[in-house]
Length: 444
Image (cartoon, rainbow, N blue to C red; front, top):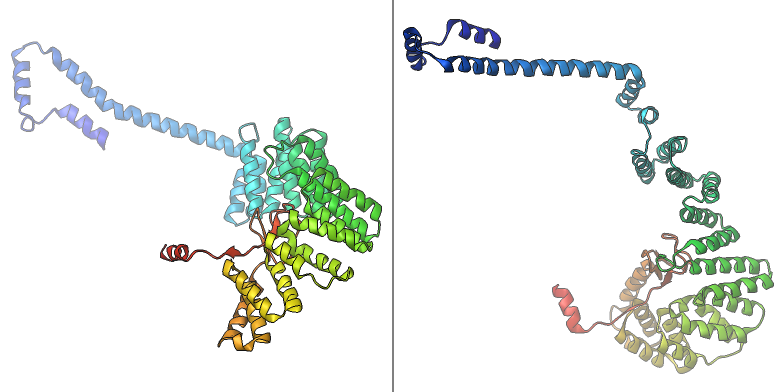
């Protein structure tokens, strides 16, 4: 329609009433005066009229070329439509298999495939992650470094799937080829920890120690090695094999002089051997070096007192308490004071303790002792308050990981959450804050 209108205008000429300049143009033509601009204007008019036609023609040619290329691609890869069919039929597993076969893996797309596999693994879709990483490993065009990354990620997939033997094989292959050595060793350590194969853990940790930059390490590898020696020592003690157990404990103390666990196991070994005096010396040493572990070592310390026939222990416990106050030690000391000096002295001790420490364990002990031994000092509602406090305490953790915050009721030498060694310690009560500080906190 547009082209017909243009042709009509060109044939019939402009309407004189529509354009007053038309009279002047006709007068000039009729008079025979030269009009050099008329040809130029006519040429410009045709040029502007033909520009849309040229643009439309180019667009049509481009569309035809794209259609031809699309037909060529579709003919070359009919599996593409099969993959789309799977997606439309809600069969994503089959679709991803097809697209992975179609995807060209080169130096520009390897990282994308690795990231996609890690994403699937984090979402819990381990099967998809395995297929992506297997597809990468099968490519012969990968560089040595890219193949190392793909093998490591495939090993992580197998670990999450519980296929430890396959993961171990891949990590071992990485070590043999000197690829991703630190990460492969860490993966092997995780596998052997899950299997409680402490000898292999120790072997891998020793190799990792040679490759680790201790200044940048998140956790000193020496701490791990010391705990592996302790695990092996405890295994030996369960078999009543004390000689290798003692060797492992000495090795643990040599590699990590701050290892509290090795000294504690040594004290237990001395007790098992009947040497309560040596065990008591070790427990006293532990109380000074690791006060946060007092709750774990306190039963052993009290057993030493019992075997040595010591009845008056309040003075010694009081010395420990003044140096390192803790809820378990407070309980034992209050019980010893009650036995040796009477309930009023124990109540006074607890009252002084609670003036400085915000400790529900101390409140529970104070209420219980007051209701049992000094009803005249009890107040209305103490029984109800005691029941509420016991309920709250039953839900509170006794230990907490200093690295990830994991809470537990019992001591774990390795955190079940972040897998750090020696990071779980006893929870300590907060000191009583100044009333002015508490008022500011309430206002805030």
